[in-house]
Image (cartoon, rainbow, N blue to C red; front, side, top):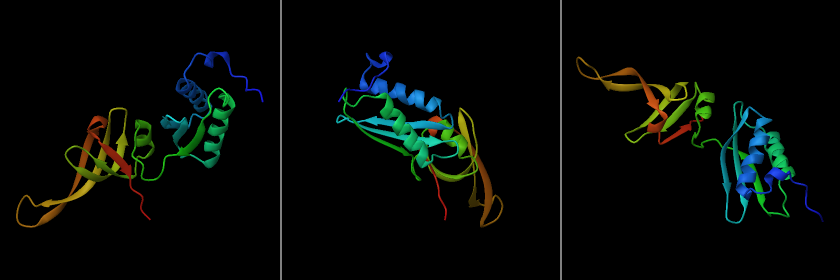
Length: 166
């Protein structure tokens, strides 16, 4: 069986470089889908994790998988391929994920604390979180509910996960 014709610009690239290039071409055709993670093991198991502005459908994963298979030659480098969407409970890794989750509740871990709060806003530099906390009254005994808001730079976030309520 003959190998598939592969474009000449892929000839001098490593397997991982070819894969990045092919994924870039594929995702350029699907602008609402974006790459979260790409892993290539020593045994050439390729794991592609995707997310999307409106989520990722099974058909999106199938399309990406077929696109990759159509551009890479398994006779040149045998590999296994797994394409999936990031799962519920996966940590947010990109600014684009924060922006698509505005209005949802996150559990955010920083070096100093863990906060469960609503994601009110997200831009390229920071997120704004809002939550209610019970704090001692300024005058008198007891506690009162206080609305808190925090502007948190991405660099201060160790992990952020969208909470799912049923």
